[in-house]
Amino acid sequence: MGSFSPDSLLLPHRVWKVKFVGESVDDCGGGYSESIAEMCEELQNGLTPLLIVTPNGRDESGANRDCFLLNPTAKSPLHMNMFRFLGVLLGIAIRTGSPLSLSLAEPVWKQLAGMSLTIADLSEASTKHSFKLLF
Image (tube, rainbow, N blue to C red; front, side):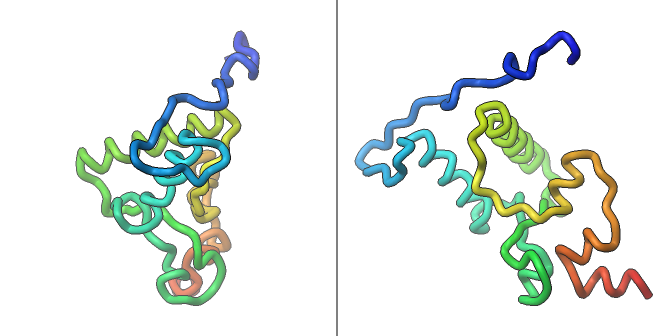
């Protein structure tokens, strides 16, 4: 990695071109931004099995009620390919500097960064379950 400059890893702002046939695009960034927004929406609305709402969200208590965790039961080869595509989306977002509208819970980001989780991290996603771990 030492022989690469950080700028050499950046991509253009848009990685693909999109034209929605028969639809108006309501995003001022054009079809590209709208396509990314729709992918993020599909990941978070239950249409795909990759993300699940945090236990705090399910129980309507504690912090991070509007955040998502990676679904630990999504283990099939199809799910692995879907997770790989999610990783590609994350990589595109990083390399283009275009953020994704994904509400992932902090423990997910910490794990993606290779950091260890603490009881406090777990309580961010599941107050009830982390309390049980203390006793």
